View 1 (cartoon, rainbow, N blue to C red):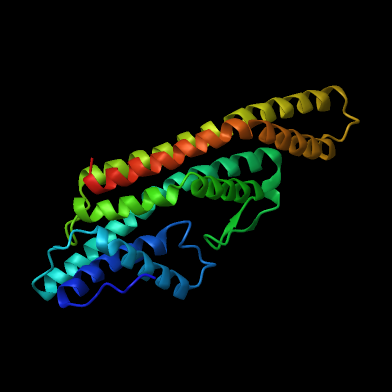
View 2: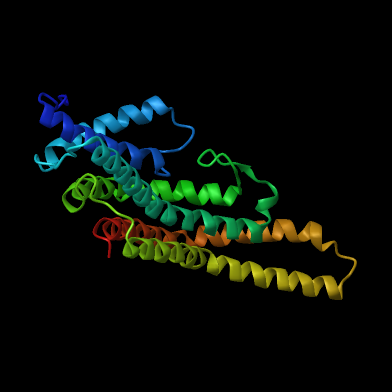
Length: 258
């Protein structure tokens, strides 16, 4: 059983800063911050996570001495949580973007579904790739990596010590660039095959006008895309594992500002 760690004013201050940082990050992460999860569940999970991290945090955390410093420190913690969550979201968005590319080529974008993560619409393939990425994330203990990064963040950046420096902005821009690169790497083999399929269908349409290419093309592209996706799963999983490991690099980049 996990005991509540607060018994003195100093411990309460430490627990408050841990809870604030953990709550901001968890409420914004794509995994735990989904709209479908109740807010009370997120708050309770943040409390449990903060209590678990309490003994792994340095006992002496500098506290603000005035109301102005307290407000600035809170804003700094919120900004740090937003930046950390944004860096992780870029990596998960790369998988969803690859699914969007595949869904467009296969014709699934015409049947968009409601995305519970964002409240908007996304293709079936985008949702499928995202759920597969979530399974890989937990299978390779990506959540352990994230918890270690949270614990290390209090050593690298004390409460109120984070600032939106130029190096952090540059790192986030590089992470956003990597999002498109990773998406293209994931979807490129199947996209090339589907492009060649559409090229062949176009040639057939020009040589045999009697064939209804629109009715033939949809099942051909969907069937070919699903077959190729199944064949590439063996090589796809290790690549997704490398994306999970890259998440640790992104979090360290945000914390140390390099």
